[in-house]
Image 1 (cartoon, helix red, strand yellow):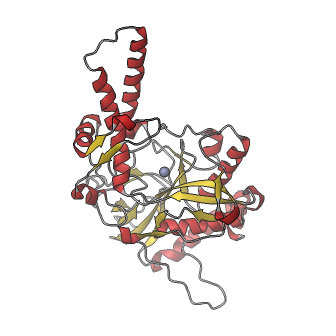
Image 2 (cartoon, protein in one colour):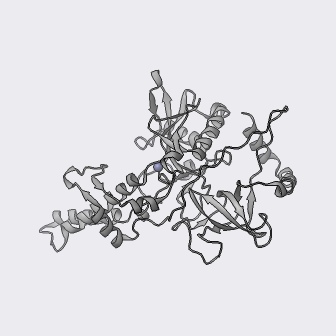
Image 3 (cartoon, helix red, strand yellow):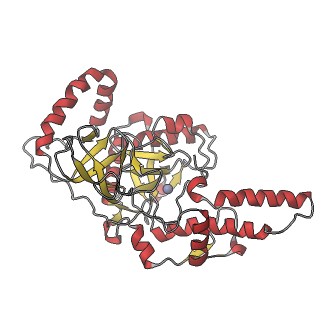
Length: 397
Ligand SMILES: [Zn+2]
């Protein structure tokens, strides 16, 4: 597909031309826009549960404000976007809420797809998958509350605890799962086979994410030599049920509590034991706060359970569809791996495909939240590879 390249070239060599084009497009589209349509934020705006600016936020910190250039879907507005007093009802990250979209908000509708050439009937965009409106409140928040919550919902098998294993089993109330929101089972589907994007058999994703993966496929097809020959973008997983996500978070919290209990009221008998105690308690301080220290959230919804994240690596396509990943955490000093990771960042984190990457996980990409500022811990190319390599694969930023 030559079009993305032309756009890049245009952006590089003629900023002045873009200035001339932009107002024309905006003026031409504003009157005829039918809901829903996508818009890009050019400023940080509060994403709230009600139209009033005092209404609570939809998402917890650090996502309570959506930063530029976040892309949202506008489903309704009190006045045309960009007019005085306008407030928009928008969908973002599987949630519905309200944003200011008046003349100073900087909310900019994304140009509609141009009509198909040569008399073909105009294509109707597929309806956006609807996600149930749910509270984004986590099942618990804060160290003390989550220790209590996880202790009552889960059981930790200390015997099976090895480096990197998950050893808790949890039972969450139906109410908690319903509140976690995200797509329903009938709103996710298998990812179709594409030329340059191959998904694991078990991977399922929302319609929006599947569309983004199709754009990724086209992007790789047009990448030429900058994409490693004979390789594909291999999607390991996208949507993950909230139970699985919350179990993983409680697992860390319960392990922290276990280590702290182990040393409670106990004085180390010698220097060696004092060293073990110090290291156990340091680890516990890390694990007890997955939201700040582990790049996760408090137990409850996550970008994967909201249906907006995928774990994607570069893989070599072998015989009978066998995939051999060439990007991972192990061996991240390898120059080839770094080059492949860079190619993947470039293919995904651009305005066309619209993904962002976690700084510390070279495989975790999110769609529909094109933001990298503040405490988001997200990056886009070229910074992901230039500034955040090698990724440490476990810690927050
Ligand atoms: Zn992930």
